[in-house]
Image 1: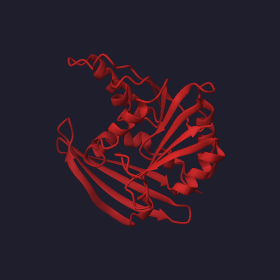
Image 2 (image 1 turned 90 degrees about the vertical axis):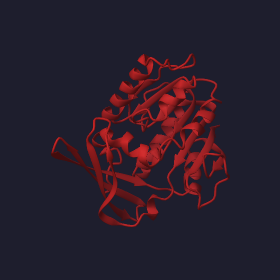
Image 3 (image 1 turned 180 degrees about the vertical axis):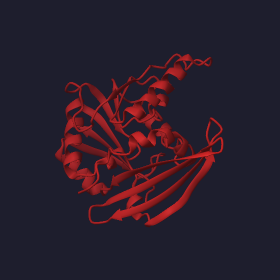
Image 4 (image 1 turned 60 degrees about the vertical axis):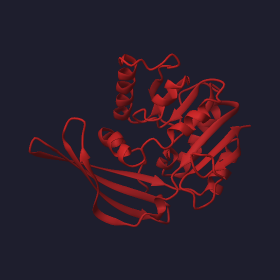
Length: 264
């Protein structure tokens, strides 16, 4: 049976921002700010995690609600929001404190048509490892987004292309507290199910002591045509498919696959 995609994220929470600052960074944030600026009402972010995208959108004046299944991730988002609100460098007159809610994206706890836009950044839908999970999520989004509202999806296309390997050192660096982290990673593929599992082992060295943190993250990849057909089945019309965060048209070799759809 496929591993549940939500597993592992609580354990990943302490390391998520550290890793992303060294890999993905903020490449997508300006894009989602531009998209969300067109919203005519509240915006829902699926899989908001530690607030990496949420906080920049809130600083831009977006009325944002973020949901995540991981309580550990949400606690970091809430703490980050509190620091932003209290900083001596005021977050700006447009800043709107976002709401963070623990929820399952397959059954969103909001009334019908509440949001003018729903965003699914950075491959969050790929954590849905079963076809039924994806179907339920798309139906749930279709229920809570208003007619004519936008559903923005960002997919990571290269995950199925990763070579399998064992115990490869991927990253090394220091933490804000002065410790040292080493990420040792293994990858395995289930090509029949289009599943990729990353076995993560973080070695945390602090004061002469080393602590090992282990967890797994599993992702499923669908092609753009298949995702498009599933969106249409759920009541959306795909308006554009982009191949990068500057708006370049999509092709199968693009670094990212971005789909912008409207609720019909």
